[in-house]
Picture (cartoon, rainbow, N blue to C red):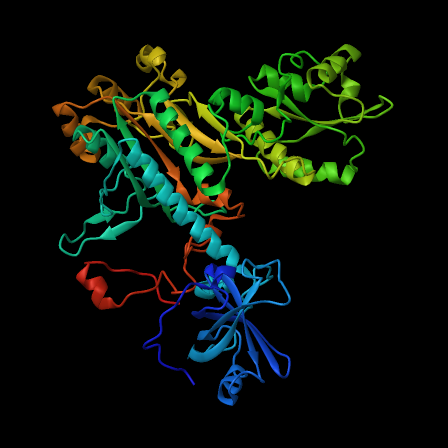
Length: 595
């Protein structure tokens, strides 16, 4: 049944035909989206990546052989059709080609198709695991195909813009050295160096700094990166980063060029204008107001600090927390005073998932009646202070958290997002960008009982805080910045340390001996002895950018062949065991039995 492709050549792709082609002989190729046999008429929707065009086989106008072959067509057969373009009598306004059709003279069935595991349709309920197993079929769906086209257009727009700004695209190695202070590395054993391993890059961080030492001045690449970490909707073990570094640049220089980049790609690819300059918010303000260093500002509902007001109240949960250097914060859920107790309790349990001991509430009725679990311990003046500071009006519902500052931030930040989604408070059509700046330089790791770099060991301290680096490093702020869109971190960067005195102090605080620092980063430290310019950079998660541009729910929807939550590929069945010969060549012995 399957026929030769030899001698065939497409006139155009299916979605490219227009009324200007009426009367012309054309050859189109693609997949059978649908075939409807109406007796003497057979209607076939022919699809390729550009769209669909209708083919009409008329028994009274076709040869017997041609019509008989048309009756064989089934879903996803690959065919080539040659015929005359004519105007349709029944216009289909849902199709770009809905005013024309092809009356065939010749049909070739190039490839047949077995029974499909699921239909090739955008709106399907097929479980994701099955779609990932047959990803090559899933990608035939218009929705996913358009996501890949969007990704391609975005990558091209990025390259064009950065070239126009004087950047040079440079590829850096995939096999590199394992370094600490980040997520777990994926390791690659070396056959020619038994017992030694390469690491796949978590980012090109050290190489791009070396390129600045090399005098490249403005570097970028669209780089593949790898992190062995737990997965979620916006994480994959292998991902793509838009990476850049600039010499003789400070915070404002990096932010300025990236605002122009963001504006260009959203305009060129999505026809969306971004209001510039993008708002900046300090890290401490983001945490205090939103409980997150990547706040979603498409809705209000800020965290309100009541620590000072609650320090001497009769409700010991609040007052004792303040005495123990904790905080009391609240959020106002507008117009939901009559929320059922069962629903309120569900939010209490939700907050406990974030280590919060409990969640108090206050319902302010339309008749100004207050229902609460704790106000009987408060004076009227104290209750009025709460209502005033939280802007609580009749009909509102307040939630309160009292605990260590970090726990309150995390719990109320998560609750804020849950409430916004539950009560449809987010304008899903908005693109709300935000720069988060002035991050802490360090954070305390309780498991290791030491300070660790919040970003990486090469992040420059704020100029005003350099003295603190030698006296009170915990209070140091970093010359670091994240770009956030709709509550998702798109990327981050920093000004880098280029002075040996500051870099050595940084290693000292992080617990590196000179020998350890030289072992891990000797190649970079040696390079810095030979004249290094001040430099700064930024990297975007391209998958996340495309996910938001496409309004997809997961980055898996914008990656051609993604992994599942356990970092496996259901399609090619990776990872997999290898035979003993390969392991022996790599000087590796494993104890795990094959299951």
